[in-house]
Image (cartoon, rainbow, N blue to C red; front, top):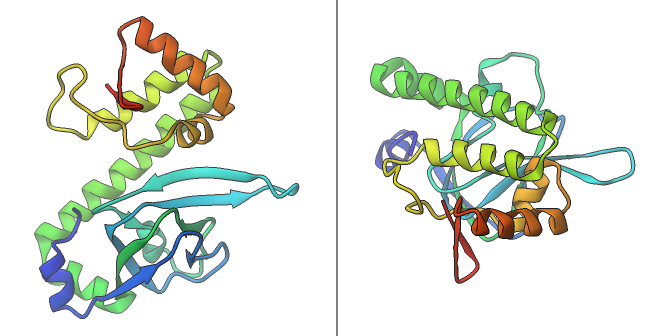
Amino acid sequence: MIINEFILESVGATIEHYQPGDFIFSEDDTPKYYYQIINGKVKLNNYNSEGKEILQSILQYGESIGESLLFMDEHTYPVNAVAINRCKIFKLRKSAFFDLLEKNPSINMEMNRHLSQVLYYKQVMGQILCMHKPIVKIKKLLDFLKSTQIKKDSFTFQIPLTRQEIANLTGLCVETTIRAVKEMEKQNIVKIRERKILY
């Protein structure tokens, strides 16, 4: 959770509901709001010239959406934000968001920490896309996801992504991802319980 829900409500944030496939914002929209997920999952994506989806990121509970663009004047969103499932999301006007940061140094610091993590994620994803071996790509993604968790022991973290989402994020096809995950289980890198991946 980046900003406490009670604080967001106290400064005028509204709660918006989205159905699967609804756009929270579209590529080339002007950023006007701070968004923070209360529940559900949101994907950031683009489409190439053939109409194929390019998945950039998957966000869920407590994460904010597209907040870095609020700090840049005269820039539009370079991605779409689309609800994967039913979502409930805080929406706060840009001016109220900046007032909140100015009056709350601890929240401002937390936002800086979060933006640094977003930049780090982009660098990690860039590395993953340059790798060739599927297991290495997937392990690098799982390492990053687990790095945000308190418990670091083996098999204590349930990966919050489907195999299709892992495939999209790593640039692999889903069949290759399924085979690689099975091989990772044989090598005792992951455990599979009720189709969930534990790392």
